[in-house]
Image (cartoon, rainbow, N blue to C red; front, side, top):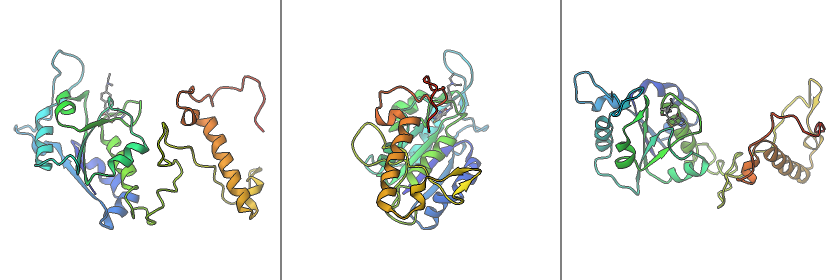
Length: 253
Ligand code: 9D3
């Protein structure tokens, strides 16, 4: 799979993609990352990528011309079955594991990183196949979001994690089933020592009863999901209340 990333900060990606899963995938030839500098497609002496917003207002807007020129030169003949152009912006539908699985089906992804106050709307309307946000918080641009999307999609590519099946077993998993959510949280994990600062590892994990261990893990994962991410179990339920004191004043054993 080829990931093209269109950005005005190509140096931003030196770090994140030179380590871990993405670097390994690239070394084993399972994926390829191409960082493209948006300024290479400007047509004026000063390599201008932004301009003032029509109608007035704060900040600058990414001009459409360099973005269209870049996408059209990276994908000269677009094939919507094999290629996907994604605009990273704070306005898009939220990225999740299901989105990652869907994007993994394409041969090439082109991620456009927004900057400044925003990107000229005609990029979203007439150039990008879809728009994606990674969460309801304000970033300074699409670069961090693009890194998140690349990492998440890359690790789904068979063989990238080592064991071709290991992404299926995964923690925040995505059961792969139809449904509103993306599965439930992973169970809690413990390692040595069995007692750390007086806090003990659950007894069942220290024994060798694997049926009991499986049962405990399922139960603990459900409890943790109910406590921290209730909306994963019942998507219309209220937000987590972890930070609030228990109204009954009874501390959980
Ligand atoms: C007052 C409105 N602006 C906030 C100062 C809107 C705004 C403009 C530009 C908000 C964010 C950005 C830059 N962010 C992105 O390009 C971005 C983003 C994000 O901010 N949050 C989550 N996902 C993404 S993907 C790209």
